[in-house]
Image (cartoon, rainbow, N blue to C red; front, side, top):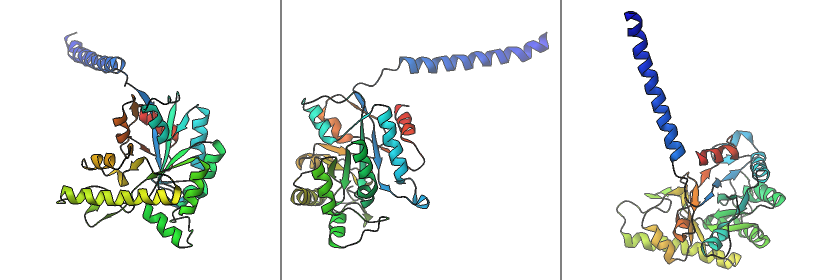
Length: 284
């Protein structure tokens, strides 16, 4: 018996410790307060191509995009845009029961070619954040190679006027990583005055182009590459922006506080990861 005691007593103590640990963890999960506010998952897309060899973390197929929208429809999600958030925080309207936001970055022509017709089919709106210099470049040349081409101002105007696509500001020419500049971040050693002047000039140029080309002033700034400097927020407010899209993968819980709209989180949608998996990740 003494020999058995030497074996079973340590084993029993180990089991008690494991059970106690699992019980404590479960109690923490059960007792954890639910986040306040309305849950808003935002998904971030970039590029859509049919060639399977070119699908990657930032490029999906038209079929994958269609499956995402079908999932949203089947599960009674209501896609919204930035204007819906502004109306909500200003007390003009409520958000739907299960809001979701579909966003596309960079302004690729593949959005117009593949994503837009599918959005039309479902009647779902989307936020399209455009880099101004690319729109200028592809408006000036007849180059529509879908692997790399970007939307022209004419294409953007068409989608804007049809009302399903909300065009937003992704900078005029800051979608770059060169000369020490990473997106719209402040460079190391750059004075605050120089940084402020640079950011005002770039974002204002894009705002002016949208006003002239689309008759519309974007209300949201989408940080290139998700690169953020703390000095940027007061500049965005000074320029009249009411929201900003980041690349931090986290669900949003909206309480009606307008300040929350300057820190909107998004989940990237890579190839071979379903929208359902993204939502499960968001809720974890």
